[in-house]
Image 1 (tube, rainbow, N blue to C red):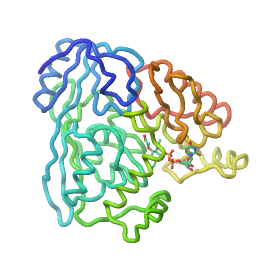
Image 2 (spheres, helix red, strand yellow):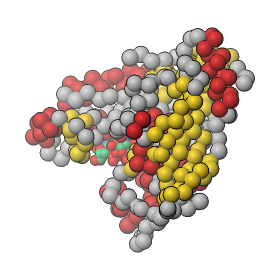
Image 3 (spheres, rainbow, N blue to C red):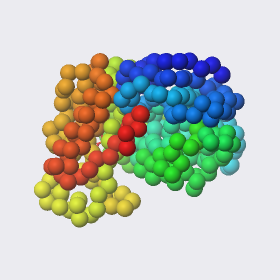
Length: 341
Ligand code: EPU
């Protein structure tokens, strides 16, 4: 275990914001994690776990310890009929993992191609795209309890998955470090083409008989056309979650905006935050160093040299304006560090 002091975090997060960690450790194995947590328990202070850094907004230097998750490895750990259980280290890049599974003929994650971030961060917010959520392919995960160093296994029911939600963002927030995740994939493809953009993209490419590979390629093309590449333009994907409102609220909005996109959801109706922000006139909004992406209003961008505080101010301005216009409160999807609320 090697502890670095005042380590820059800019290149470890996709927003590319300048901030540093007071203490920093990169962990490549479970033993590293156990040792690091032991050090943390004896030194107290804050602990932050950093995976792919694709869902965080750093507003200032982080006091305490940053544990960077670098556990790699992808392996088959079991078979059940045509299903195959595949375990990946929490530090494996999510997209690299999806590509590897496709190459090995293990299907089910193709719609989740090109999502930034790491395998370990996936279950935290139950990543999802194009009609598939991680929880549909989740088998179990291993995590180390911060307070005790005990290794726990969590099954599907233990994770309390929801839309961009899990127990690790709620009741158990900050209490566990995820070290590995096992997925239940299938050697027989079961394509999910229900999400409109996928079918039209396959049609446009002249694909008559879709395969997991061609679906993956279609998703990659769609994402590239809308979402900025963090290597070119700092961003953290969707900054806000799509809000779920009551049917009454949705009906009242539909009277005013009959064309408003909406989807059935657990506990109400899901609205498109991108549409609300776009309607409010924020798409392409430019504040010099930062702004709102011009092809997807849900994405805030660091055009170069922005601070996390400036981006947070922009997010707050958008939240307040959307609430004033539509009486809908947008909730952040991105984690702000250090935490403010
Ligand atoms: N829309 C606009 N203007 C915009 C953006 C969107 O009018 O600037 C409209 C679209 O035309 C569409 C609706 O809003 O009618 C929804 O847009 P889209 O299909 O692009 O998806 P989204 O709801 O904006 C969600 C996820 C994305 C995921 C896509 C595809 C959330 C917060 N975002 O975006 O996930 O890739 O669906 O499944 O759920 C992420 O979480 O970081 C992320 C990128």
